[in-house]
Structure formats: C-alpha cells, structure tokens
Image 1 (spheres, one colour):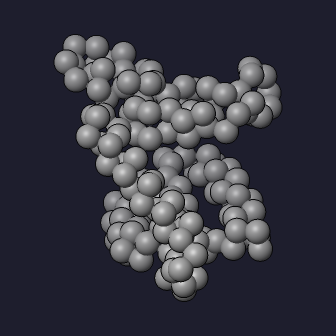
Image 2: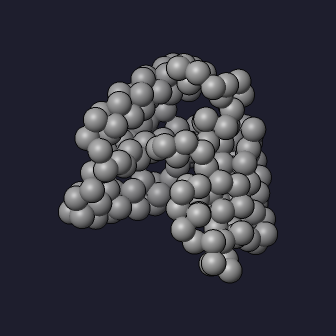
Length: 158
C-alpha cells in the first residue's frame, strides 16, 4: 500500500483545526503513539504484524507527486538498462537509515529493529551499503546527521 500525502499526528492536527492549510499538511493522518503508518495495516493486538507492506510519499501538491513519479521512472530506467556498467549503478545499493527520537528507550528499540533490517538488506540478495544515523534531541548531533545525510544524497541513494 502506498499512501500519497503528508501525514500529521492526529493530536497535533487537533491543535491546528483553524489552520487553513491543514488539509494539505494532513491529507492522510498518521496513527498511533508514536505515530506510524505501519499501524494502519496492522490488526489490533499485542503483535505488530502488518497485513500488507506500507509506505508513504509525503507530498502536499500535485507538482511534488509528478516530480516523485518522474524520479521513479528515471531510476527504473537506469536499473533496467543492461548497457550501463554495474559500477555506474553502485549508487542504487546505498541505503540511509535515519533514526531520530526524543526518548532513549524508544531510540534503542528502533535502532535494534533497523539493525535487523540492515542485515537483510546487506545480504547477498540485495547487497546494500547501509549508512545509519541515530539522532537524539541534541542540536549538535542534528547538524552532524544533516551534513552526513547531504553527503549521502550527493553520493546517490537507491
């Protein structure tokens, strides 16, 4: 399932009901606490076991959707083109995990889950190069993560 539209946590949305741009900012609200689209595809209960894969393209305008679609088409052409040497496609194996929370315990739990996902992506089937940034609420760390993320973007992400 692919959600198209920015989401805002329901409780945050309730506090902005007078905002005329709220429909753009919260086209498809997130769910749960902490907010997660994963919960939209999960039956209620103790286990978080989604029934379908779920993702979100966080956009607020038709132009952003068109830009995203164009980038997907371009990336798919590169991946399918067998005339391009593998070394020129190496950027498609770069994956960035950005983990940012304000609570230490939650951060450890999310980091542990992301590390398990990284092992799957690094496996020989995909062969990803994982770049992980764990971000706490410290401003210094935020700027470090931002500068590292910009360098990953320049390198190319798959």
